[in-house]
Amino acid sequence: MLAQLFGIIFGLMAVILGAFGAHALKKKFTEDQQDSFETGVRYQFYHALVLLITGFAQTAGLIDPAAYTWLFISGTILFSFSIYGLCLSGAFGTKWRFLGPITPLGGLLLVAGWLSLLLAVLR
Image (cartoon, rainbow, N blue to C red):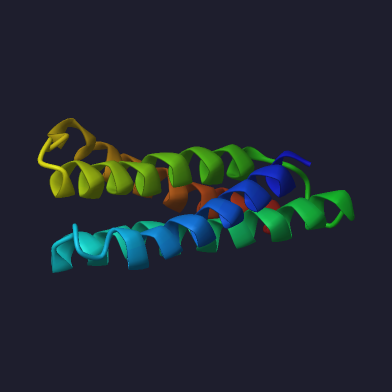
């Protein structure tokens, strides 16, 4: 249920943020900021789908809930939301550089989530 809930929330937010970035923020962003923002949205949407699929697989008893759920949730938050913060702060002149190191940490958590999912499927 947790995976499904976060999958739905992340999917909803990805659609809203994608539209917001493509329209409302287009004139505020540089090309690099636009590309980065889109990357954050894309990865958030990918992992929303993964959370939904694994959540339904858990409910059906096909795979056991494991660490991958929390790794995908925390990795998505750290990866995508740090990118959003960096892009928005840059566009509005505040430069939240402290978010820079958080992005790769989120990426590592996502990789760990995929490895954890692999192990859960192989069991």
